[in-house]
Amino acid sequence: MILNYQYRCYPETPQKGQLNNWLRTCQYWYNFQIGDRFSWWEDNRSNYIAPSGDFCYISCSLPPLELRDKPNFYSQKKLLPQKKKDLTIVKHSGELLNFSVVPSQTLQDVSKRADLAFERYIKGDVNGNRSGKPRFKNRYRTLRVEAQAIKIKRIEKNWLYLQVSKLDGWLKVRLHRPLPQGFSLKNILITKKADGWYCTLCLDDPSVPHFIPDEITPTWDNSMGLDAVLYEDDYLATSEGEKLPSVKSFRKNQKQLAKISKRKNAKKKGSKARRKLAKREGRKHQQIARARKDHAYKTAHALVRSDKKVFFVENLNLKGLSKRNKTKKDHQGNYLPNGQSAKSGLNKSWTDASFGQFFDIFSYIAEKAGAVVKKVNPAYTSQLLSYRDEIVFTDCSIREYYDAIEQIVVDRDINSAINLKRVGLELFPTVNRRSGKITKSSTNSTTKEVLVVFKGIPEANALSSDERW
Image (cartoon, rainbow, N blue to C red):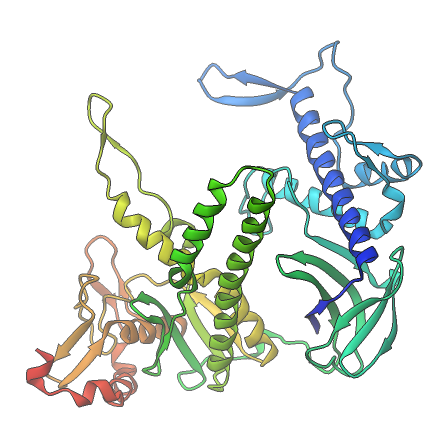
């Protein structure tokens, strides 16, 4: 199995100068390829408005233009030998860049990144989802070096010494955790962050077996439903009756970050004080991101330790949930209130929770443990009572429901997590979207198991009927 181990590395002062020079060259090479593709697009395409009024592109061949083949990964990669013969002059700054001092495979990886960014913009990824227009990079952070250009010189108690092609001396890496036995090195990523340099080792560990998700058959006992809560201090609700806390790293550091940004913006551009505050601001952003990522890993490990083999999560449209409201105008063209002031706080909370990052990390941790994470449709799961075909949570403000028949308190989020589990097991009722009526139901087959969960929750049994009301 392919594993990534990230460590802190401590390059010497001359090595830092070399690595910074590599990053600057890779940044220029990336921007050159993106600009070359856009130039070809503008020179070999013409804007045309069809008779129907639709805007489209058509090919044209005008005499003043020198037509050439469409640049791609292979044609742009073939330019590297020519650029290595002489120094390259950057037009806007006049600096000289030497492509020959950068490892060849690192420059080829830059060409691959540019090609991938442009192809996702034109065609989309494997799922057909298109990304935005590629931007020119004002900074380049990560260098990829293949295993052929790397030699492991020695491994001491807590240190690893690597010899990288065209890098003077040995690169010193701090091993805060041991490397797996019998690994084979595939490549490394050298990344410059706000607090220093980091080295990510891509290893092939044969001791971790290859996981096949289709081999696991989900049942009621080996599966768990997870509901994204985003309410107060709750982060996730499980179908086992538990709630996991959130971290809210951005909310906790929002005032400090705003204070640093305000001081930085008041300083003169290019001054030493502004650069110092910009570095401090970057470290604060790094602290927020690390706290969020650490919380995601700890939450994922806590869920995997439950020994469940299948986890059903919501297939959330995260872009739509954090999208701005549409503007409203009257007949005179004046803007009307559209509720964006309240929606901005909700958008910030969705971004701070970072459920997309958590689901990716959770899938990775679950796969290493031999489990699988499946996304299911969350329609009607937060409204329907999980042990009875009855819609009771009609409003988001209803967080609990007291059932006088069963004499239990039904928590909205735990009820939704159980319904997600039923959706994954294909036991959730079929609801007509227009009428809201249930046309097909198998709720009776899971009523006993659901009631066991609610009656086992301490909070539901600790309250009397008077306190519940």
